[in-house]
Amino acid sequence: MAKMSWAVGTQCVAKGDHRKLKPGELAYNKGDILTIVDTSTKKGYYQAKHNTTGEEGLINSTNVREREALRVDPGLSLMPWFHGKISGPEAVCKLQPSEDGLFLVRESIRHPGDYVLCVSVSGEVIHYRVIYQDSKLTIDNTQYFYNLIDMIEFYSKNKGSIATTLLKPKQKQGAKSAELELSKNGWLMDITKLILGETIGEGEFGAVYEGEYMGQRVAVKIIKCDVTAQAFLQETTVMTKLQHKNLVRLLGVILHKGLHIVTELMTKGNLVNFLRTRGRSVVNSVQLLHFALDVCEGMEYLESKKLVHRDLAARNVLVSDDKVAKVSDFGLTKVDSKVSDNAKLPVKWTAPEGLKKEKFSTKSDVWSYGVLLWEIFSYGRQPYPKMSLQEVKEKVEQGYRMEAPEDCPPGVYSLMRICWEQEPRKRPAFHKLREKLEREMAKISPSPGSQHRDGIRSGC
Image (tube, rainbow, N blue to C red; front, side, top):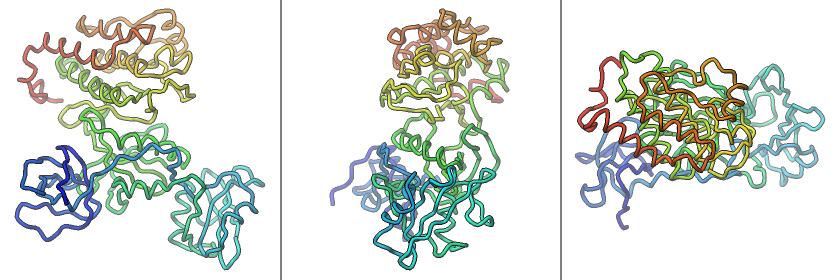
C-alpha cells in the first residue's frame, strides 16, 4: 500500500487499538483522534500527538485514516426516526413488514403538542401517547424526559412500561442518522469518558461547562431541546470543516440526552470580561492590537471559506491560557448567500443592511468587526453607551458613528470608520484589514516578533 501523504496538522482516526509498542511508538485505541506533527520521520510512519492525552510518538500510516469533515446535509438528523405530523394508519403502513422493536415517533394529530411513539411487536403496532407537561415528556407519568432523544435513548436500553425495547428505528425518507455519520467520520465522542465540572457560561440555548475528556480539559455546550439541538447540528457540521489557530477548535460531539458540543477549553473566558476585569493598568495597547489581529486572522480564514459569522462581538471571542484570542459561537454561521433570516439580531453589532433588510455577507461581518475593535480599545465598554436599541437603529441609519475610545490610536479609529461605511462594497475585506493592523503594530511595537505575549505585561 502506498504511503499516505498528509500535511502537518492533519487529524486522523485510529482504525484499531495499538498497545504492543515498539520503541518510540504512540499508544492509542480504536477511534482515538491523533494529529500529525512531523512528516519527515521514517518511511510509512508519522510523528503524531494524541489529541486527548497529549502524548507524542510514531504511528504507522496504515493504522489510521484521515478524519473527514462532515458534509452540510439538510437530511442529517439527530432524530431520523421522527416522522412529523402523520396519522396512526400512515405510521402502521411505514412499520411494515412487521418486526419486533421497529419504531417511529410522530406528532399527535388528535392532541396537538403531544407526540406518539409507534412500536411494532408480535405483528401489531402499538401507539403510546407521549404527553408534554411541565416542560418534560412522559408516557406513564413515572418516567420523565427532557426531550424525544432522551426518551428514545432510555427505551432503547430499558423496556420500562412499553411492550418491548426499541430495537430498530424506522428512518424518515431522506433522513440520515447523525450518530452514524459522526461516528463514521471520527467526530462522535463517548459520554462515559466525560467528567463534567463547573458551569462556565449560560447561553440562550444551553449551559456551557468546564469538563475533562480522557485527561484533557474541555468546554462542553449542552443543548437539551431537541429542536434547538437539531439546529446546532448544522453549526457542528460547519465546525468540522474549520481548522485555524484563531477559531475555537471542535474536538467532537456527544449524543446523550440532547447534544453535547465539545471544544477546546479557553481558560481566560470571553474577551469582553477579560478586558473589563483587567483594564488599562494591566493590558497595554500592544496586547489590544494582538487581540484585534487574532480576531481579524480568524475572520479572514472564515472569509476565505465563504462563511459568514453573523454574531461577531467581543462576547463571542474567547481568550486562551497563552492570551490568544479565538472566534467562537458559530450558532449563526451560514454560507455567504446574502439570504434573509429572522434570527434575533444583536442590534449594536449588526450592519444597517442587516437591520433593515436582514441581508448578511462578509461585509456585514466587517461592520461587526469595527464594533468589536471599539470594544477592544474601550476595554470592554458596551457600544453606543447610554443609547437605546431604537436610537441606535435610527441614528446609525442617519449616519451617526461612535467617537473614538479614550487613548485609541488614530490609525485604529480610522479602521473602525472604514468598517462602518454605509455601503457594504466600500468596506474593506478582512485580509486588507489585517495588513493595516500589521502596519499599526509596527508603529507601536517596531519589532513585534521579539515580544512574546507573556512578556508584554505580567499579571494577565
